Each structure stands twice: as structure tokens, then as C-alpha cells.
Length: 528
Picture 1 (tube, rainbow, N blue to C red):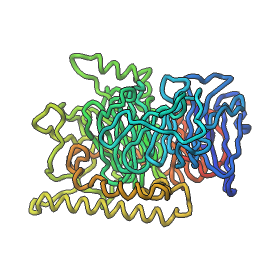
Picture 2 (cartoon, helix red, strand yellow):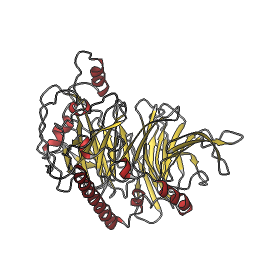
Picture 3 (cartoon, helix red, strand yellow):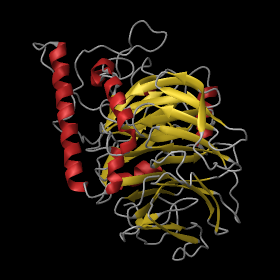
Picture 4 (cartoon, rainbow, N blue to C red):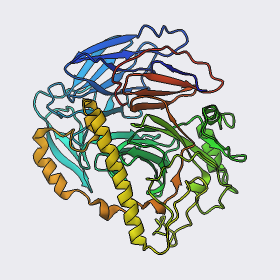
């Protein structure tokens, strides 16, 4: 069994909202052996606004000081030092830059002063902590424009915030993530698109479309070669950064996927026969422990593979996902999926979590061709789910129409059910394509609706392959770990951290690792 308990979060901070009207509390704790976890190092109470996201600057963090950015529902961003108990600055204080909810805030990798902020308006802004925001609304001039994005610079006599304004896609920009080297930026939006940019040159590198609905979360593999997304289609989608194409989808969640994250501590070199799992609680220990003793670090294992000229070393990427179905899923991205031209390995036996409403994926549909290949490779199925048998008497188009209709019906049912049960939660509105848009942008919304990309035109293209055109992954483990929708998933060396909307922050200890924890409870933990 995993050692489960509620505790404070990594570098380690957490936040909470009180059920009291208009009151929000932020608790920040340091998770160390000597720390008294019953006494947070800082506590802040806000009225009239709620914190929605936060990010620590690991580059400048010391034992005496740490820079913490906190985004709020009214559009402001606050810079605080919880150790010194100082409040440095409040950005967009008068809401002249953007009045919509802050959905994601992150420090620019390698920078002590630059940070990026995304809003539910679909805009991103680049700030410098050394500059002010000005007392009037900023004026912009176009810097670069491309397909479904535009970047503007701020026109002013003196340098002021924001330095840049990005307009990306249609609807809310739900999350973004920098690549491990900090050169590229992956963004997911309510329009269902993943867009990957070269951050410095402001060039679009590649795009991907969800199978259905908006994309809510995104993460990079530790070596920056793959991107995983999750969203309202209940799927996790693996996208190759090099090939700019979908290489796999995973189905295990029964509702929207809230967070996806790679586990850099268990990405492993396959040296023996693959493990088999029964889905029991004991498998959690094996899954967390699997691969940890094979090498000292993820980077060394990946560099070993890259430096092998005669025969590539098999690499397994481990990633996890949590969703509104309160489940934690663990996935393996294996050699037969990454390199389909190689001979397939022995089939794995995994717990079958698919139900009868799962989209069929066994017909002989059109395949997605990788760049430089004229003939599509055979689809690997060794890490895939069993596929439904399809009668040869039916046409290919009718089979796919049935699959799409089944999938849409399922997802629509889940969405309505989710809304019925949680309509009283204001925080849930950010996941709906219309709920987060202010009344002042209604005219813009009407224009966007008319020009929105037709899903029927992207389905079956490299942007959005059909279900049978790419391998379908099955989770190694799919476990219900909460009573309310999950909003946080962080992999640490000694444990996994999760949090749910009910307010519990839980640490799940890895086998053989001793960590210190404390039972605490907070209300309405926001998504990080």
C-alpha cells in the first residue's frame, strides 16, 4: 500500500480557499525534516478575489528568500517572498492590462526577472519584475503574426509592462509549459489545440488538435522529445516534438483530464521482460519502484540511449494523469510505440479499464504518415488496449461515423453530468468554453464562433488522427484516490503529491523512502 497522508506541497508551497464568502487563505510550508509542519512559514488572507495559480523561482531561491508569483481570479499577479514575509509588487493592479482570470503563471526559465502570465481571455503577457505597469491601458503594435496567433509589443515612451502580448487561439488559454531547455513553449487552449512555439524567435513549431473539446493541461518529457496533453476528450495524447505528430493516445479516465506530468525518477531502460500488473493496491509499490535502481538519473539513461550507435537502448517514459473522475492513472510510453519500425516486443498484460462506450479502434482506416515515409508503418499494439471487432460488411465510413457518434455521446453525457453535480462551484466554470468569457468580449466571441475550425475537417488529418490510426495506450494503474476532482499531480524523488478540489493535499510515499508528512486540510485547492 502507498503511504497516504495530507501534507504541504513541494519547494514547497500550497494554497487554500476558505468556504467563508470572499475570504481566501494561502498557506506556505517548507517540507524538511526539521520543519514544524503545523506552523506554515507564511499565511495570507485575501478578500474579494481568489488565487488561481502560482510558481516559485527556483533559480533565485535560497534558504533565506524565495520569489513566489501568485495569479488571481480578477487578473492580478502578486510577487511575494513567503520566507521574508514581504510583498514586493502587484502587477495589473488596476486591471488595465487584462480583466480576465489568470489561468497559468510561470517564471521564464533561466531568468531572475521575466515571467509569463496566461489569462482566460486567450492572451499571454510577458512581464519584468523591475518594470511598472503604468497608469493607463497599454497600446500595442504588431510584432509577428501567424496561423491562429499574434504577438504585439507595448508602445510607450518608457519601458513598461507588459513587454509582449501574445494572442493564441480561440477562447481561454488554459495552460502553458516551457520545454526543459527553456527554448520552446507549449500552449493548450479551449479551442482544443496544442501549439508549440519557439519562445525567442516567436515562431510556431507545430500544432495538434484534441479528439474532442478543449485541452486543459500539458507537460514535456524530461528530454523534451515528447509532449503529453489532456482535456475534455477524457484522453491523454502523446505528441512527438521532432515529428510534429500524434504518436499515441491513452484512454483510462472517465471524465476530463485535469493534470498530466512525467515522472523523471522512473523513466527507465528496459533490460528485462516487462512487468505484469493485476491492478491491485500492491502494484502501486512496484510501479513507483520500477526502474529506480537501474540508473542514477533520467538524463543519464536518456544520454546512454542517444550515445548508443550500434543498437538503441530501449527507453520507457513514465507519466501520470489525474482527472475530474478522481482517478490517478500511470502510463508507460514504451519502445514499440516510440519506434514502430522495430520488431514488436512481447505483449504486456494490463488491467482493462475500458468500457463498452470506448471508441473502437480496430478498423483498417487511413494511417498517419511520418515525415519522410511514403508508406505508413504498421501500428504497434503491444502496449495497446484490445480493439473491438468490426464487421467487414460495413463500410469504413459508417464504422467511423459510429465511433465518433459513440465518443461524442459519451463525452457529452459526462459533461452534462459534471455540470449538474458541480454547477454551484464557480471554479468549475473555467473548464467550459463559454463560462470564462466576460460580457465585454461577447462581440469578439461571436466572431470567433463563426470562424472556429470545423472539427469534422481536422479529424482524420495529421492534426487529429482517427482513433484507429494511432496506438491506444492502456494505463498501468487507474486508481480512485479522492472524493472530489483532482487538480494537482507532482512527482518528487521520494513521493508523489496530489491535491483535490475538496481541499486535501496528499503525499504518496515511494517504497523504501522515508518522508515527513502532516495531516492538514484546506478548502478548494486551485489547479497549479
